[in-house]
Image (cartoon, rainbow, N blue to C red; front, side, top):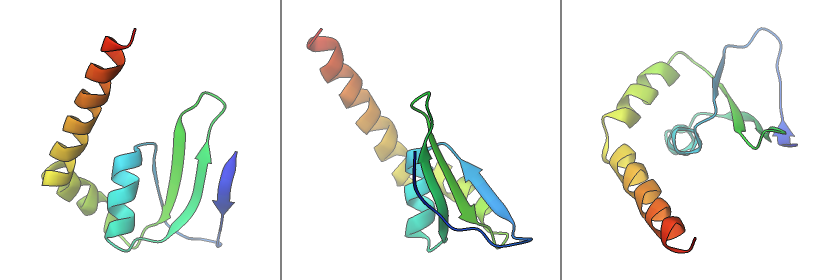
Length: 84
């Protein structure tokens, strides 16, 4: 199920299923073209790529945002394991 989808002919597209990376790309001003949740439950995002998305993905991995995301996931896991 797609939230929305915008497409243009002959456009470079950057795809990711990582919600945190997608949020980081939006934070960097990259235009979101498509956001879907697949039948498997996996997210799918497509961005208009002006050639900077690969660098932004590296910037994300080396940033505090990535550490924040890892800690958030660890906390969720800890909470979920206690409620079972």
